[in-house]
Every structure is written in structure tokens, then in C-alpha cells.
Length: 149
Image (cartoon, rainbow, N blue to C red):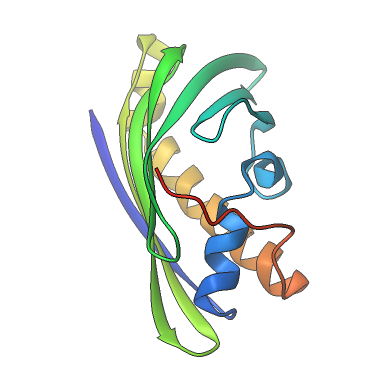
């Protein structure tokens, strides 16, 4: 099991960063390898990813959601096993720290080798940087979800 912690400072207010992160179907715009996410219920998402030509599908359940504070999830079905939490920390009126904590359980030899080589960690860091570019270039979220789980 790999434990990954990465963070990024974004030049948008906390609410904007949080609201964008709750727009799961928009993740393919800033997460490499994520082809599609379907929001099936308020707490269940279906992910389709493709990395190095290998497509994987899995379901993730939102286990905790507190507006402007955190979104936690765990996979519940499919070819990927992980759990994580993203927390949002107000730095000032126009800056927010977005912190990702991810537990990833590699499946199979290719995943294990990629994990040992730091692929998942580098991908998480890259995706956070892409999120930073995405939200800062927009300045506003593409939508909002203020519900809790």
C-alpha cells in the first residue's frame, strides 16, 4: 500500500477551489489518464481511466464531504483499490492550499512496478498542478455541490 501526500497552492478563494473539486465529471480536463467520470448518485461515481493503453473502470464512493473543508472517498468496485481525502485550507481571501492524501493499493505486477518507480506519486503531483492551472485560468468553478456525505 502506497501512501501519497501532495499539495498545491492555488490563487483562488477557498470556496472556488472546493466547488470546482466537487465537479467530478470535469476531472478529465485536468487529470491525465482519466477518460470519463459519471456521477451516478450524490455519493457514487464511475471512473474510466486509460494509462499506457490499459483501460480500467472502477466505482468510488464519497465517504465524507464537508463543504469548503474536505472530500473523502474509497473505491468500492472495479479494477483499482484506493482511498483518499482532499482538504482545503484558506491561506487568505484569494489563496487556498489543496492537500491530497491518497492510499493506493497496486494490483498486479505492472501496477506494483509503476508504484515502486513513483508513477502514482508523480501523477498525483502533476494532476494537482493541472488543477491549479485549470482553476486559476478560469477564476471561477464550472459548478457547485454544497451537499454533505
